Each structure stands twice: as structure tokens, then as C-alpha cells.
View 1 (cartoon, rainbow, N blue to C red):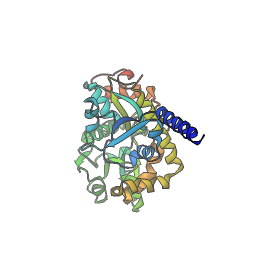
View 2: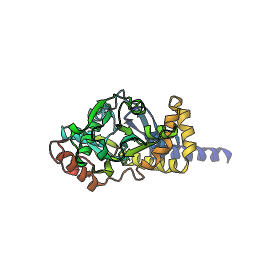
View 3: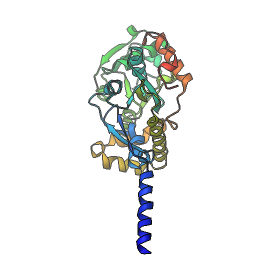
View 4: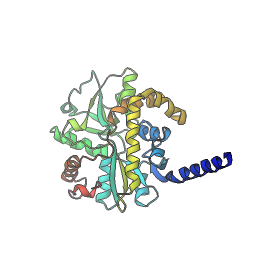
Length: 311
């Protein structure tokens, strides 16, 4: 009897194991080294949300933020994280890419000045020095922002401060800077008792767009792994909202090199910006931004939304 029971239990165990889905590999290239912008993915990995979806997700850090679209287009990564405006330019130029979901559904870039100075409104930028980085898109957005306030490029002085935005602002080398991240540099400045005024592009005539999106190769936009991936990311966002401190502690345990005051402030400042429904794509919003990109010669022509996002 005992022998029969043992054989039966062994059989049931074998069938159970065989019925478990085999984990499918998914290579995801981040836009940079792991940081608070990637919190939902790190959490989904730590909490086993990807495994629940039958996925074995590898998070890959690029050597350059421009790498993800290239790797995805070449089939060297399954999913990439990148920036919507640059992505639209790349698609317009012929890269075989498609957006499958959203990580951060609002811009993070903003224009920042120190409170107590002469810049109270964007119109006050006339005759002022504005610092910007080497990044082309933030400079283009700034010029458009100025135009919408009735200012020309000649009305201001652009100063290339490379990546020393904070230093340039605090040293009064410039009167304002653009390209600051509202979830990184701005909280860090405020934490150190520097009162700032922030101007958000979506509040001053630039259509809303997503800071970070998930992209895939356009040849296979409906890979069944993708929706399972996004479902796990959604659980990661919800878990982050419910356990902000616990997840921060787990993040720096896994990535001790990220344990600093800037990332600590950014962890909590970024939480409101994550898309609660990563698989949802606002096609009307994409249409408005496509028209904006076309009107401002950032892409060759206004493209149909289906050119950019999964149908």
C-alpha cells in the first residue's frame, strides 16, 4: 500500500511539474543604468511578477542612452525603453520600431530658475541666459517654447553647459536651465534648500507626450510575451505605490551603487509619473504630438498613429 501511494504521489508530482509553463526569455534594454525611472521593472523582477507571467526577464543596461532603439531594430533586444520624441524621429527615418506600452506617461524635462530672481514668467526670459546640455531635443523644445511666448531665439542667449545644469544655475552663470528632470535635479535642489521655479512644457503650449515608452521591433508587434510583460509591470507600479519605502530598500540592496541622496529623493518623486496602465496607449495624444512634431519640422511629415503604436 505504501509502495502504491509513493508511486501515485510521484506520478502526480511529475504531471504537475510538466504542466507548469516553461519560462520564456525576454531581453529588455533600459535607457540607462538602473535608477528610479525603472522602479516598476526592478520590483516586478524582485517580487516574481515576471515569473508569474512565465517570463525570464533580463534587464540590460546600455553603454549609451541611444542604444535601445538600435538594439531592438537589429533584433539584439526584445524590448527597449526610450523617449517618445526621439523614437518618433527614428521611425520617421525608417527604423523598424513600434511602441507597445508606456512607462512614464508625462514629460519629465522642465525649465528651471531660482526663486527670487528676475525670471517670474517665461516672458521674463527675454535678454536672459539659458543653459542647456548637448541634447538636441531639449534645445529644440526650448526654442518652440519661447516662440509660443512670443520670443525669438535672438531674444535670449543660449549657453551650452554640457551636463552641469545644476552648477551653472547655482553659480548664476545662467538665469535658467532647460533639460532638468523634475523627478531628479529639482527635488535634489529643493532638498538642499534651493528654492526653484519650474516651468513644465505641457503647460506652456507643447502637447503632452510620454517621457519613457516600451518599444519593440515592428516586424513582430504582437509577440504574446509583450502583454504578459506589461501585466507584470502594472503589478510593479501598484506594488510600488503600496510599498514605497520597502521597495526603495530592496532596490538599493540590489543596486548599492545607486544608494545616494539624489536617487533617494527621485525614488519618491517619480512615483506619480508612472503609467498605472502600461499597456494603454492614448492614440489621440499620439496624434496631437505627431502633428506637433510635423508642424515644427521635427519629423518629415505627420504620420498616422499606427506608424508609431501597436494597433
